[in-house]
Image (cartoon, rainbow, N blue to C red; front, side, top):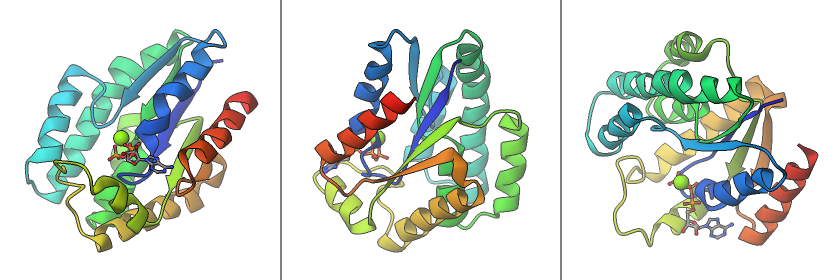
Length: 200
Ligand SMILES: Nc1ncnc2c1ncn2[C@@H]1O[C@H](COP(=O)(O)OP(=O)(O)OP(=O)(O)O)[C@@H](O)[C@H]1O
Ligand SMILES: [Mg+2]
């Protein structure tokens, strides 16, 4: 049975650090795994990502473009791959829109729920790994980056709201998530993820 797994958490939480070896661990067990990301994952989606990360725009536009990119991603990549029996592992998905555009920027959750229903009402991740870190830890990790995108440049309060948004989302549907304490060392996080690989 194919599975759709997403990695979530704020900027600097450690998602990308672990995603590729996590996917390889399933490949080594003979599974066909597609690694992808949001915003992005398709040619058009990557163009939208470029705009979303770099151009200022109204909150509504930001949410609509995120979900526009997501619709392409769902239809062109995620559903076809799952249909072929592949596993799909995505660096972010809709939880990020609720956390960033919803809680972070203040857009109504009801609007986001409508978009979610439209774009993937019949599809949710089988499992979401939420990398939870205190805002200060995440920011310290990003401090050495030479250039920060439009989201990474936001203030501490924004990220506190984003983190709370993720927790709200988890409270609404706890069985879909595994919460990982991302403030641990990379090795400690890796050990937890290895156990998850085995359990899956
Ligand atoms: N457990 C950890 N301990 C210390 N540093 C870490 C840990 N995990 C990741 N890092 C470092 O923190 C930085 C950010 O990690 P990473 O790029 O994986 O975050 P991310 O969740 O993908 O962030 P973004 O949403 O911005 O892509 C990297 O420099 C990475 O090496
Ligand atoms: Mg990343």
